[in-house]
Image (cartoon, helix red, strand yellow):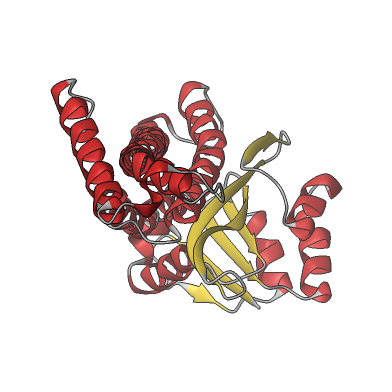
Length: 327
């Protein structure tokens, strides 16, 4: 599916443009053209190549949909790869996991082309906003449209951050109580997701840093501050992910220490019980031997004597261990 928007000052917003309209718009410096390709077919991709003459490597990155966030300068335009985040449910493992949706952006002086294989909420929101207030998003140039897209992508990270805040709080509450059976697997999954979040954000942070530090013919100097704001937001998100990843590592270590302490306490109690029952076992084994001449075998009170002796020795050992503060 292809969505097209053409803005020209003091004119109505044009949509559903033909190839001829787009070709003419590219030659007009006072126009801003936005072409959004969502799950494009082969014909639409071919049109993209013929009309805009993008580099084959950039087109290959779009089609493969496996690129890390990056920024490439092709002299006549910039090629950006950014990521939107979503939380998906893995039915096979019955867990929630973080997934990245790739958004490819071609960015020229008077046009923006976005390419994505799956619907992305941020792009849909900007499309709806452009149709309502095209002057705000297209009237200041193509760079502000790119800023709006990147800013909305980053803003849409917030539901994921809120989700992990809640999950980590629950994990912390469960760590030292009656921890669930899947406690360790839950913590490890959260650590993997936060590591993935950092791996996605780090290159995007560098991408924004490069855009704000170096002069570019595609970004007006007065608009640099807006891109810096997106960069600052990404830095804070990265710090969030890094801090929570470290917190989960410490929580896991504390959980193992706590579990080890509980196990030691159990072993200690079992050792005390085994030690206290040892005299009774020893006495019973002595009088259980099959020798004919054991002095107490014919004694009328031999049974009571053996039981009493076992109790006295066990109690004596218990008192001695308490006196030594072993228990």
